[in-house]
Every structure is written in C-alpha cells, then in structure tokens.
Length: 433
Ligand code: EPU
Image (cartoon, rainbow, N blue to C red; front, top):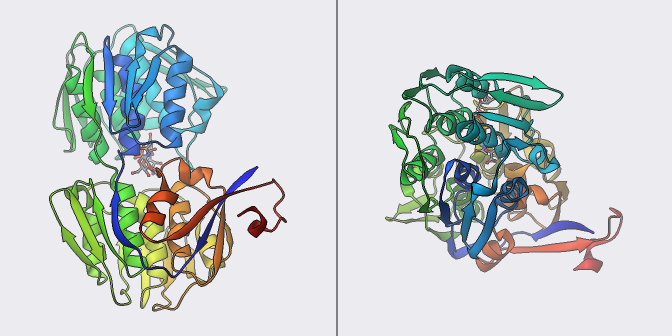
C-alpha cells in the first residue's frame, strides 16, 4: 500500500498547537547514550520515524531501549559490546554518522556504514574525519564503510574549515572522554548543539561554550546515567508559524523557545505578519496579503536552511518578487518543480531562487511528491492555500521529522488526510478515502 496525504486548501488555520521535541537534538542525544555507563532517561522525545530508526539501530547493536511513556525513552547502552554499525538501517539516516563519534569516544574504534539522509547534493564528512584525526585517530573509508581507530584519544585543538552541525556534534562525542582538553573552533551554534552539550554535561561531561563558536571540552574518565528533557523543535515550530501566515490564520504555537525562532519571527514580521512572543509560545496572525522579501540561509543564528522551502511556499502567494539564496547546501531547490506544478512561479539559477508572488491569488491543487523532509512540509503548506485537492506522494519523508502532522493541522482547521492506496498510481484516490 502507498501512503499519501490529501489536502484541500483555503481553510484559515486557527487555534493552538503543541510543538514536539527537537528531531535534530534527539537523533544526536540517542547515540550519545553509548558513552554512558549508566541508564539514560530522555524526555520530550518526538514520535517520528528518524527517532524510531536511530533507536532501532542502537537496539540492533545491543542496547536496551524502551519507551516509558509516549514521550520518554529509556536507554541502557551497556549491552553494546562491539563498535560496529553496519546494518542496512544506518544508510537510511544522516544521524547514524553520530555513531562514529560515540563509538570512538567509548571504544577508541568505530566501523560504521556511510550515512544516508536528505539528498541536497554532496554531503561530505571530511570535517568529521578531520576532528577525529586531530584527537589522534586514524580514519579510512573503504567500500562504503568508515573505519576509525585510535590508540588513545588526546584532547587537542579542532579547527573546522566550514561550520558543520554534524562535525561539531561528532567532535563533541569523540572528545568528552579524551585525555586532556579539546577546543573546537568555528563550531556550529545551533540549538541542538547546545542541547547535546547540556545532555553530556548532565551525564558528567565538562563542556563549556556550546552555543558560541569556540567550545572547550575537558575530558572526563566516566559518564553516568541521567534524566534529561529535549528542547522543542525549532523547525517544526517555524513550519507551524508559516502555516498560520500562509492561510491568513491565527495560531498560538506552544512549547517553544522563542529565542530559537528569532530569525523566522523577524522574516514573518518583515513581510507583514503579526507575531506576538510569550515566554514559551508565539502567536502568528496574518490578515492581509503578505509582502516580498529576500532571504539568505546560513548557520545559526542566521536564517535556517531547514525553513527555506517552507518560506518559498509562503512567498509564492505573497505580493512581489522575492529572492532566496541558499547559503548552506549545494542543491536544495529540487522541490521547486513540485511547487511550480501547483501554480507557483519560481525560477532557480544555481543557489538562487526568484519567486514571483501571486499577491494572494490561490495556487491550484495538483499531484506532487515530497522530495525530502522540509520540501514535503513546503508542499503541505502550499496545498493549504490551494484551490482544490492536492495529493502528496512519498510522505514517509515528511513523517521522518513531523510528529502527528495530520492531527496537528486538522485540529487547527486544516483539511488534510492520510490515505492508503494500492501501489498503482493510476487508481482514483477518492475511492480510498
Ligand atoms: N560540510 C562539509 N564537510 C563536512 C560536513 C559538512 O563540507 O564534513 C558542509 C555541507 O556540505 C554543508 C554544510 O557544511 O554545505 C553544512 O552541513 P552540516 O554538517 O552542518 O549539516 P548536517 O550536520 O549534515 C544538519 C541537519 C540538517 C540541516 C543542517 C544545516 C541533522 C541530523 N541534520 O545536517 O537538517 O540542514 O545541519 O543546518 O541535524 C533537516 O532537519 O531537515 C535537515 C536536513
């Protein structure tokens, strides 16, 4: 059976929505438990496929993983006795690269299949390997397997040539139990880096400066168990902020850290949406057609690349010509073809997209395909504004990172359903509804 979303547009979203725990923090914190000699209880775990997958990989490696309740996961990684992760699931998720740092930190060696993840062009791991080498490890990549060994890990200066979330996380994981002090320079500053560092510190690590571009790690001998609650998901929150704006809605987005949303809030205000910031919530209201803007994505605290496709949908129905420059990924505009099928007018030249807004005129529902996670979210947002019905294919991409998206949007008044159809594209979806 194929699963699709069917969305009928033109409803204004209204009400309240609760944001789940952060995907990109969870998929780093779960493998980080490998470094602990105790039992870790992790709260505010989002119920999404990427989390299920990384937890399953740990389980297959020998960890004892269980859900205490819907959002609390308990992990005892002491059963992992071999530093090898070569099961097929590893290829399906980018975050499996964190097994490298965690296994290296614990066993001084790691053998992991090359990780998968969204396809935004080349996704090198040279900076991850550079960090491991700086700590004294020898790395080789052969037939799709990354093989790393170190006699001992010695704290050192790790300079990142490019700001990388993944490489910063791996450098943290590999250095927390190294001998002496490590300093990561030109580190990534994303909220999930800070969350991982806080998690490691709660297990007994000594990390200072996470959230700045220089992180200092004093190696410790042992890490114990902990109970830790994951931060809310910045990008899920941003996606619902855009959902409200694109439908001329009025939505209170709860369980967020407004500080993490500043770049998104600033852009929404710039184009004419009204954003009210509370201590743990933001309200986004839009009544008129929104305006054009220019966006350049960059590392935190700049405008997040993971919000770029969602804003492309929003600007497609705004007034005027907007320009989005992708500053992080080589190729993150593959979804434009799908949005254009719905009547958007976007042209792409290299890393720049030029969007001619419809000034409030509806897009038209069409059959489209989620190319990747955030691209899929962008299609749902566009579909919410469409005249008629949109069917979205390949929704497993969306379910990798958005918990209960059908329930959450429906409870705000959106018309979205998940349908199951036999694997024949030509069948009329209405029959399956
Ligand atoms: N890069 C290198 N060498 C490296 C690593 C990265 O040149 O060794 C380059 C990349 O090619 C890219 C840039 O550095 O141009 C940034 O890549 P980064 O390593 O920061 O990305 P990542 O860790 O692979 C994480 C998120 C992505 C998000 C990026 C950027 C996770 C699991 N993934 O990926 O999230 O787009 O940071 O913020 O945390 C998503 O959630 O939809 C998603 C794709």
